[in-house]
Length: 318
Image 1 (tube, rainbow, N blue to C red):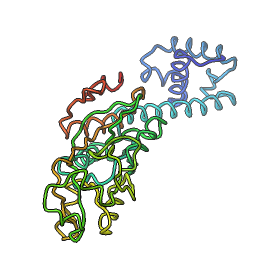
Image 2: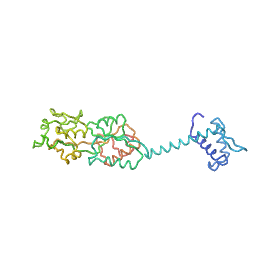
Image 3: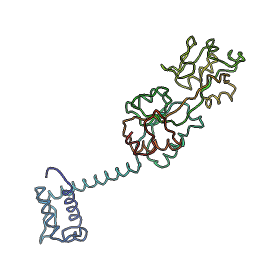
Image 4: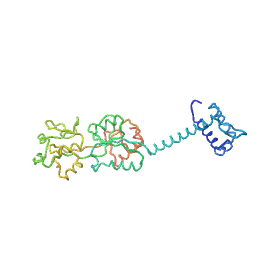
């Protein structure tokens, strides 16, 4: 027998039952077969294996040396099959697994962000699945997705990349801030882009337009950062004016460390998207977390994205 097929497995299972029962007669009840049928099938197995597995007759039933080896191998084979079936069942039930999720920074203070609720629900339902969560800028998250190194990302990108799907989750308002003693506050009128030319600005550090003054010439972009925490440090230095999410800057406003600049025409909304690789067939665990994130945000479809992600069929075909 060169390759084991389903018929061979049935014969090997019969052999194990006979050996464990101590003979053909004792195995009849367990196998629900006549003794003659059992004998015929044992002969079939021995023929296929090319060896005698057991002696049966007046001296009683006993395994041959080869039969004992086949018995031990068969035990191991069926134990492995049982383990394999259990592991498949675990995968189907998402009992085990690992999901890699990456987020942009400082989302936790945004009241519209409910990712923490999705993670909590996911962990409650699937307590044995492990999570690997990182904080990176949107560009790095997109690159990691395209390289297949992470499963899911939450990004805020003005320029969406080919090969990725973007699904709108929530947004945040970005406003200009400075310290309470910054000279820009001496200007009592509404601040415009032309007013900003006189002061050092924290740039977003991206090659494409993102803020209302990104394309404005002559601005003093003496510092840049794609990270909100780093931007806050630069603003808190007292030197720079820069954009921060209003929910994040509120922490510093309450401490009397920052002031929102009167510049409503320069405020803007940044959108955050659940971002996935277009061609990736995700694990059931990653798919489940994706759906949890979608559900808690009552996911709204981005017209520039290809398909909503509210069921596993759409995800598998995305």
